[in-house]
Length: 99
Image 1 (tube, rainbow, N blue to C red):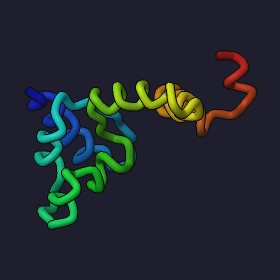
Image 2 (image 1 turned 180 degrees about the vertical axis):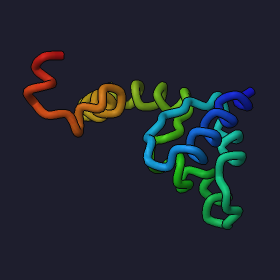
Image 3 (image 1 turned 90 degrees about the vertical axis):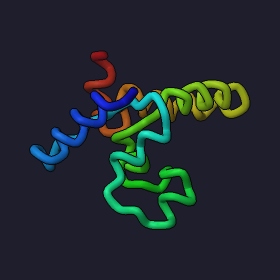
């Protein structure tokens, strides 16, 4: 189900080392095909501690649903979502005013 996304992700990472990409996966189980090492920590944490997921290059759509539900209880999560979606964490304030 995620074969196309995994193929494109691995191709871009192999060819362009300095490019930051974000890829959505349908199922967390398919993240196992992106993790190169088979260490016990990655397997025990369901790959949440793997480099692609922890660095934000890979995400699963169900995580966004959970974050939106938690925004009801913690209003600061909406700021985190704004930075995640819009990338405003590294954007200068004068550029944010334009957009």
